Amino acid sequence: MFAQPRRDATAFQTVDTDIQIAHTESEHFMKNIFVGNLDFHTGEAELRQLFAQYGNVDRVSVMTDRDTGRSRGFGFVEMTNTDDGDKAIAALNGTQLGGRTLNVNEARPKAERNGGRDRGRSHAPRGGRW
Image (cartoon, rainbow, N blue to C red):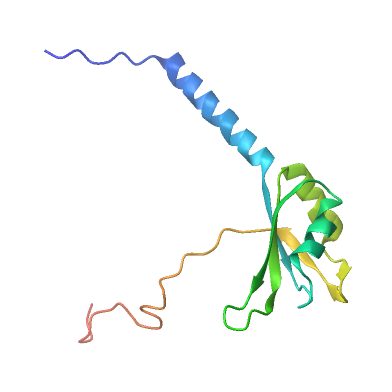
């Protein structure tokens, strides 16, 4: 009674190609970089100036302790171009800033946390047997 929609293989190929192109372009534009072992007096302006030698810096964040406001000794730099970000990582990893050797690499996504619930508890039923 109802006609099945026609599935055109070329339409799917076009969509796949468009997705692939968009994915490639987005990968090419942004690079999020972790910068560890920072001197506690290093600020965002100093970090921006350091990375700007290698390309356009979009955002800089030095992580601080929420209670004291002091630097936690690491931060993140977001560069607008992946190639520039890769150059900055290669050039700056292992260099000295403020008397400390920097640890510079591509930032990894933050791991999911369960908010402290179930920490150290087994999920096995009580009573001995599974």
